Image 1 (cartoon, helix red, strand yellow):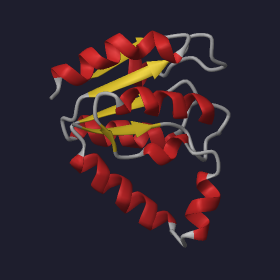
Image 2 (spheres, rainbow, N blue to C red):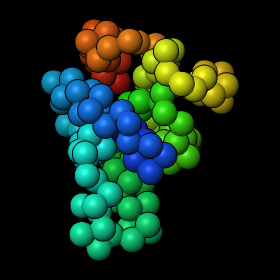
Image 3 (cartoon, rainbow, N blue to C red):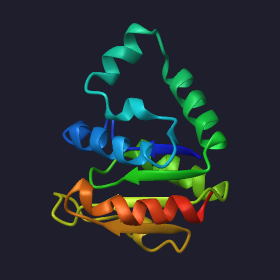
Image 4 (cartoon, rainbow, N blue to C red):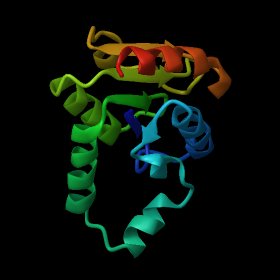
Length: 140
């Protein structure tokens, strides 16, 4: 099971530690194609590797096409995460969005209002484990 994990990178990295914990949980149920989202210094790594914005876009789209499902942490708004979710929905890839209601931002109506997207509200990473496992199992 290939899982595309999505979380804010350029939109804000305040949740990077949380992303790393979520990646660990997801890895118990499949292969995370985008584990780098949970890496503290990802932007510096991309720059050191000489990746252009076009390179990053093309690689992410290739991973989206490969993925059996997409899991996105959406508590920190991000244009890139929204784009990835929309591409996944367009490609009929199952999408699970993880949202912390205590976050600084309300969840977009475009996410919550879509019947093609499952939304799981949570407080801690441990709260998502059983429902995440059920989501992955449904979409194997």
